[in-house]
Each structure stands twice: as structure tokens, then as C-alpha cells.
Image (tube, rainbow, N blue to C red; front, side, top):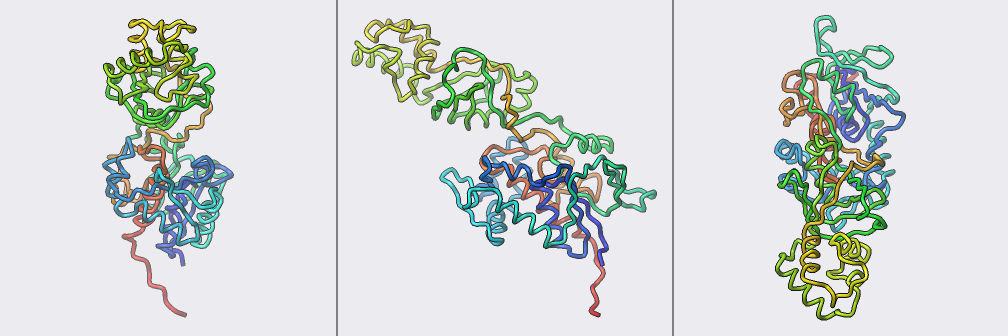
Length: 420
């Protein structure tokens, strides 16, 4: 006999993991999982370009937590209780073969998300989770005498579901945040994180597909917001790991700037200006008869080098022998600090990570329970937690979902089953 009813809101990674964990841990509970769309686990499906970057191979909780611009300190404890190693063991024990790339990102050996999705859906079915899709949850209301001390979950068709516990894993659903605000839970305004930058100037013309490694990038208005890494030019501007990481670190500040700012790029961060000047002078002597625009340095891609020369206001057909010290110094300046005007975030809407959600002081991170509303638990992207690329956001979903599912009924005394 099912003596407790648990409602999980949100059929993504965190919601599925919470529902599975709860149903497996407490078989006496009736676990309902509501998903607003027709399909479940949508972000798991597209993670890693469809290959499903399931987690990261780093094991140290503090190291893993350091990849979260928001939630770093709060996640250290949860990651000690269910971390990346536990995630890998959970999936491999259920038949999902995994491998780690050199960059520590972990993928299924099939290089497709299908096996991961099938495993989660199968685990939910076997555990007895009652899944309902195309079911929008409009609001939740804390227990009261009117509801016989049950939580009230109101569905889009005005159906009311009374339950003993609620796990909110609804991601960035505005109606859930609005519902939480109404009962007094603090919500930090959501803004996008992990996005590329739009550039509308000649510098990027013809550069789509060109990448360059280990550059320093910096936001002009915020001197401390800088990043070193690889960049990639796109049809709309600039992307790559360094850009995505910087956009995550600066998510709220860039939102306040309405995504209009000056990006500074140091193409050769390991070359001090004086050394770079000497190298250019030496180059002028060795390649004196070569055209400056086409005879490039430091393995900089040809088209990018031509744009740098143009940005330095050096005549296009000048040869190295004709390069004056003014030209040399101008090249040094642009190589060390190319300024590009950013006019927006990418228009393709391919970012699916939000910065914002339930304020972290509202949560007990040992159990994922609300600090003010016993019986209400949080997991996944509904929280103001977001990580950098590399499997970290899915790991946060597995971790918080697991802890919520484990803790949701841990203080309930179930009647002992009697043998007939």
C-alpha cells in the first residue's frame, strides 16, 4: 500500500534522477513526475551536440565545484555525497558504457544520447514512477488545514493534486519561479549564461570557422573579468571555450550592459610587448621582400593576420622592408590589445544554461530541502546554480536530484509490510 505521495515537477535530468532515486529508495511511496512538454529529458538529448556529455572525469569535489560561477561553495558538500564517480558508476552499472576524453568530458561509447535516455526512462518505469507528459504545473501551495496539511499542486487544467512532498526540478520555468515568489521564496532574476558574442564590424568578415588557441580576452568595463583559452570565429561573431566561459562568469554584468561592450583580445599573451617588438623587427629583416599582409607570424591563421594588419592601419601592399617603427608599434598594440565592439549575444538561441533561480540561502544543501518550507525540495536548474561547459551542469542535476530523492522521505515512518 502506498502511504506517501511525492510530486516531482520537471522531466529533465534532475527531475528524472530525483523521481528514480525516491521511488527506488522508498517503494512504499507513490511518485508522480510531471513534464510540461511532450518529450522528457530534452537537454540531456542535446547535451554535447547530441553525444550527451554526461559528466566530467574530475573526481575531487572542490575541483569540480570550482567550475561553477554560481554555487561553487554550496556544491562541495553535495558532490562529496554524490559526485562524478557516483554518476559514472550509476550509469555503467545499468549498462551504459562510458569513456573520458582528454579534456575530461565523459560520453557514452555510442556517442549518442539515446542509450542514456533509454536507461533513465527504463529505470523510472521499473521503479514505478508515474510519468505524465504535456502537463503544466501552474502553482504550488504549502500545506494548510484546508488541504489536510498536504501540499497542493495545481495543474494547467485546474486539477488539484494533494501530496506529502514536492520536488521542484522545473528548470527555468517562469511560472514556477512566480509561484515560489508568491509564497515568499527569493528568486534571483534569470539571465542567459554560456553564449557567444555578436560582432557587427569588418574585422570578422570572412573569418567564420577560424580558431586560435590560448588568447587572453577581457571585458573593457570590468577589468577583472578576463579569461585565457581558445576562440572560434562564427558567422555571427565569436565563440569558443574562452568566450563561453567568460559569458558565464560575467552573465549578470553583461545583461546589465544589454550585451553591448568592448571586448579586448591579447592574441599573444605569452609575449611581453618588448619581446614582441624585437621579434617583429627581426622578422622585418629576415622577410624584407615579403608582403607584410601575407607573411604572417606565430602561426596566426592567414585571414586573421590580414585583419590584424588592417586593424593596425598598415597599407595592404606594403612589404616588410617598408615597415616603419610606427607600423611595428601599431602591430604590437593590436596584437596585444585588439578591441572589438560586441553588439549582442548570439541570435541562434543555442545557449540553454541560465544564471538565476532560487536563491541559494533558501536551500539546505545536505537534503536540498527548503529552509523555510518543510516538505519542499529543489533540484537542478531551478536553483541559482550554473556551471561551465564540460559536463558540469548535468552533474549538478544528477547530484541535486539524487540528494533530493534520497532525503524527501527519510524522516517518514512507513508501516511495516506484513506477509499474507
